[in-house]
Picture 1 (cartoon, helix red, strand yellow):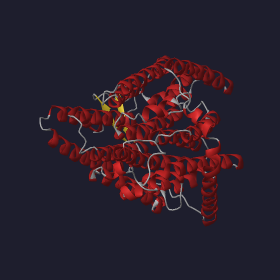
Picture 2: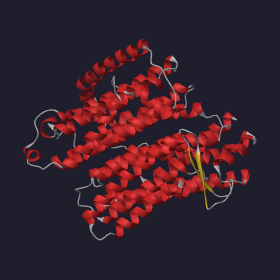
Picture 3: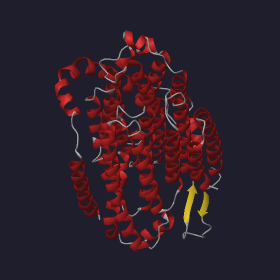
Picture 4: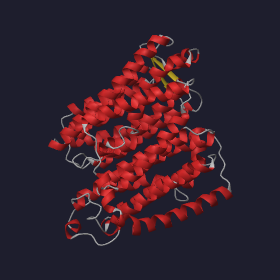
Length: 529
């Protein structure tokens, strides 16, 4: 039953928290994650034969909480369990406590529930649980700064979910149901003008969960807190943001009469552009990775709002590939910071020489994100850009160019001579092995990209030799231009970038911007009707 995919991680969390021997508990946690991965793969294979439905509480129809595993949901459940398995292995030798394992499995259960549930109120509950657990993980080391930022993160999420709750209440008044499938049927019979308010309320919350406007400056700083464990950044920036994009797909399907694709296309483009600029303005490697995530989220949102199956499946495949690559980069960055004692991109050199496994892993992940030939990002971006018109094609190429520039700047840590202090630090083999394992999937996902998409989505999308050659030449040109930008333009405008990097929103300004974006949504969506 699908409910066990939600309950079992939470029960494991309680068991591990009460288990007396912590070293044995860590081993049991790894074995439990492996078993969950086997179950998730089996769920995916069964979902290919048809949707799997479970009604919690034995209520019939839409009266209870319905869990649904279609192919898309099963894919994200499988992705979630895999990344949590990697994080568990990565953290095996860390001096954590049973509380860390408890929080880890609880967050996993909440995210799996978000992918499976069909109940609108259940989404609210699970999103709040995930926010609380994520905030505690951010505050895990109990530093004063992390405590403050964790509480701000929690309060912002509480505020945006109140918008969702108000939208849900208004939607229930219109439809009389909480089930997404039945609500979609009821919504299709309504006048679109009645949907402007609930649609604006709900989509504001979803946009915030994705890291779109107005949180494109705040959320990456939270995901890259220097005091937080590196595994937490990998989970939040690599995976939890994708849960927001998944919910965007589900709610867009439910609000079918509200065609706001052009609006979100613009939002995605703006988010991608600002994400690239702010990533370039950072000096901390974790913050560079976090802001580059926002840029890729904007690019994915653009792909999801384009017409055609190629763009849709390419965007979903990029969500998967980016989650894997960003998990590898965040975990690798955490290992680099622990060895070098700093996260400053200007002070870290010689990662290849000091940690060759981590250096190779970083190259694989970077090539995957930037879309190098024979890597996963190349396949996903090929399909995302297959059917776009010329202006959008140019814009997406420029966004990818910005991503390349960001990672050229980041890749400087790989070369040179390491410091004496870094030479004396011990390197954890579990951490290196887990980073290399997950980064290797970026290459496998590219070499077998078409076969992977056929296996995951059941679609056979073709790649023309001419199109592949064209995009390869564009990518090669982008790398050349990117090297020139890093060599000549970045030093010239370094002061301006530094000032942009200090751009931040206080809690009060975040609340004001949330209200402003809600008002803008009301006006724009109302104008569309």
